[in-house]
Amino acid sequence: YLGYALFNLAVGQRQAGDLSAARASLARLSDLSLRSPAGRDLVARGRLGLALLAREAGEPVDAESILASLPADARYREQALAVYGDLAMQREDYRLAARIW
Image (cartoon, rainbow, N blue to C red):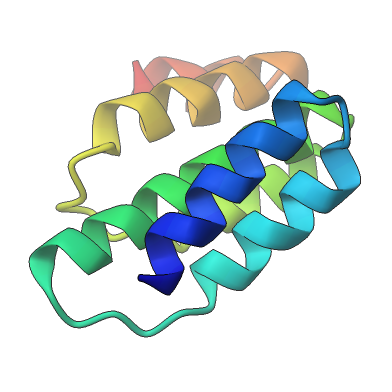
């Protein structure tokens, strides 16, 4: 199954220190159009991982746009909101951070 293979590949690439390859794998995963609930959940998890890698790379705008693409009812909603709040704090947008928290 391609979605699981891409996610596991990205995890391995990140652990090996190849962040560029991990981001490419997660970007490919996030572009998949999976219809099953498990597939949609995996795509959302991949997008969250992609946002975390963008944040680590010092690209908060990319991270925010990726987080905005997550469905509101995704299982990873709380984690995505925590990352989004952290990004707002880094930008010193305390009003937005307070709304998120």
